[in-house]
Each structure stands twice: as C-alpha cells, then as structure tokens.
Length: 103
Image (cartoon, rainbow, N blue to C red; front, side, top):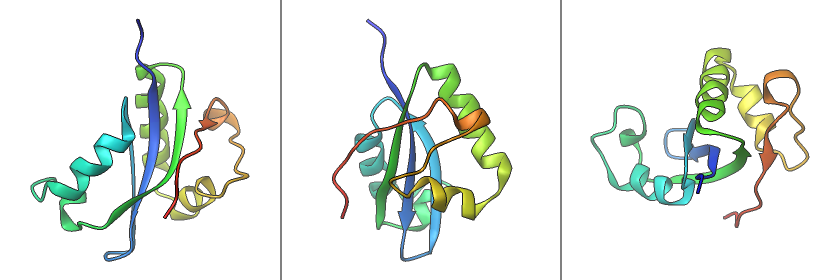
C-alpha cells in the first residue's frame, strides 16, 4: 500500500515566518516542529500553525514541489497558497488542497 504525501505550509506569528515542507503526516509533523527546539529553522518558534495542506501524487513529486517553492524565495507565493481559492499553475498544477481545521 502506498503512502499519501503532502506539501504543507506552517506559519509562526511570533517570528512572522512561513515554513514549507513535505510529509506523509503533516499534522504529526506540526507537533514535531512545535516541540523540537533543535531544528535549524522551525526550532526558533513554538507557535507554528498549519495554514495549508496539499496532497501530491508521490514522495518524489512532494520533494520536487517543495524544492520548487523554496527556490522561488517568494513570501507572496506562499501567502497566495494559503488562500482557500488558490489554484496552482505549471509546477504547482498538481496540488490538491486538503481541507483541515484552521485556528
């Protein structure tokens, strides 16, 4: 049985930063980000919230898309991805939003 993989976007109000990652369980990964102070980027805050989750078709796609988003170095792209009616194009066209409970 194949695992599902997701691209997720977390936000910390405390440091006013977004974090993009991929995981087979973004909800468990959020808990890890909030509890592990040793992580280089996300360890700087303990108030990460899940802003968006997108399902992708494979782990290799998740890795490629995560790298693509990070290479853009674009906060505005990430903020657009957090809007409910975001529709990806080109490299982001395959993203399928996963509904989740927001704070």
